Image 1 (tube, rainbow, N blue to C red):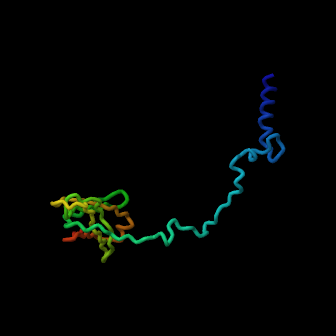
Image 2: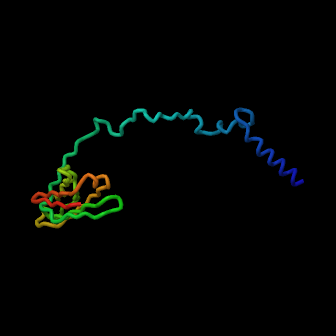
Image 3: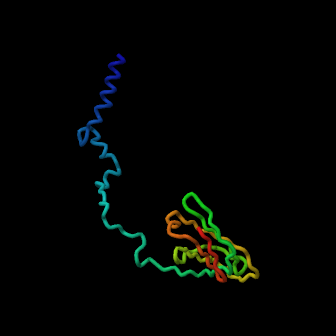
Length: 161
């Protein structure tokens, strides 16, 4: 009795597996799939032209408005897993400077030139404060340079890699 019941259940369960089209009472499973009505999927060829995320009209050149720090007091390399971190210390022209960053200015004879910039507060504060900034250089960048020069308003310091 158990064997007959198991055979009947297995036969009923497997009988619906082979049906496609309109043979069964519900038709194919695709007919009840709400996402199946969107049409066939097509794959774009790999060499098809891609639409850019930013069009030429949307591109703008950024003008750096942050001034250079008054003086660069130190530059050092710190190795990392994927390259090196160049950190610089300096003195801001007024207290409250923020958003410090080492920005790339170019290459000169195997030396990467970085400008040390920081935003100044709108209300002029008396005094000078130390400020630091850092930038990560990957292994590809390091292969092309021998030294890094950090430029401030009053001086520039160079560190050899």
